[in-house]
Amino acid sequence: MATGFGFQVAASDGRARTGVITTPRGKIRTPAFMPVGTAGTVKAMLPESVAATGADILLGNTYHLMLRPGAERIARLGGLHRFMNWTRPILTDSGGFQVMSLSDLRKLTEDGVTFRSHVDGSRHFLSPETSMEIQRNLGSDIVMCFDECPALPATGAVVAKSMALSMRWAQRSREAFGDRPGHALFGIMQGGVNLALREESAAALTAIGFDGYAIGGLAVGEGQEAMFGVLDHAPGFLPADRPRYLMGVGKPDDIVGAVERGIDMMDCVLPSRSGRTGQAWTPRGQVNIKNARHQDDPRPLDENCSCPCCTGYSRAYLHHVLRAREIIASMLLTWHNLHYYQHLMQGLRDAIAAGQLAGFVADFHTKRAAGDIAPV
Ligand SMILES: [Zn+2]
Image 1 (cartoon, protein in one colour):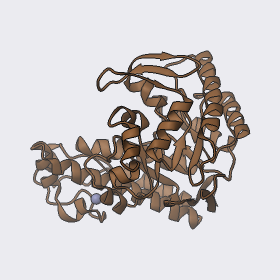
Image 2: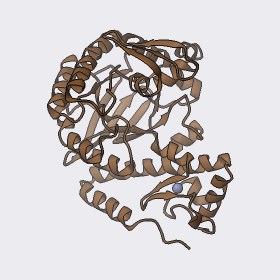
Image 3: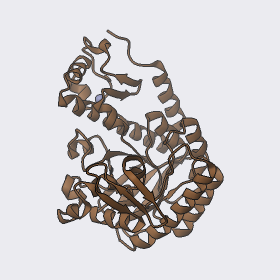
Image 4: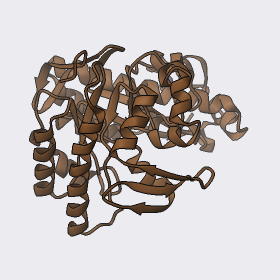
């Protein structure tokens, strides 16, 4: 494992575990949820507010930052931490997934991907080597291997071919990353929903050797049952003494199910993105604050929540500012959602440490099944 970077499991309960990832920029309590700061900001939140919700680490998107404002510019301005005023650890993705999902005119070869920017149409090239260089310029604490995730639906042959390419790219990423004390490189397991391919991918990555291992290519439309089907086995293919990161997950019940199955880290745009469209997450499930039932409701979103949104504002106010398209609607709902997600992670960590995860999970599902409070 890279110097200055470590992972200690403190307790386990079934397949779930809780522990700490140590980095020179601070500790990351696991299981950890990483808010997504796509373009150098978690939208509608000040960095200190993101930290106040309990986030130990956030995720930055290589694809967005390389196109605008550019990784070399960010390097000249002191790196991404300084640029966006976030002092805690940052994980950056490799850009591979978003090249596939956002850019135009992609051309994939053994060497890498040529594509046109969705911002201004300019031509760019991403490969294992350029992705490592961009993530080095950003100053990322946890760097992700450059990989390919095939568009779904894909045949078994396409998934197998893509996985093999990603493993060759993982080797090239490892070589291009080099030895960087205090910075970690994570490999990414692929293989779709095929367990044999997943196991083959895990063996290839483990042979190369990484500081942590991600499970990629899930939460891309396969459904929760299929995802859990993979997660029932895939974490066990990976070394137990390294963090396991499930990319792009998810809804609160996806997170709980993933943690039960041995996942240590996750990220998702959902709490921040849904906050901007009036969707709130509470222990009683999802609340659409746009709904007219809230317009005369003096109660907070969640009376047991200690976030600034719930301690200061009513459902009626949130409904009003959302309808009036006031910026504070995005601010308050994003803050609440990120607070709820971090509160859920703390609950999971405490339950695992106490050996009471099964009871915590049963209570989580019971509360959600009861649904939102009755209208006034
Ligand atoms: Zn709240």
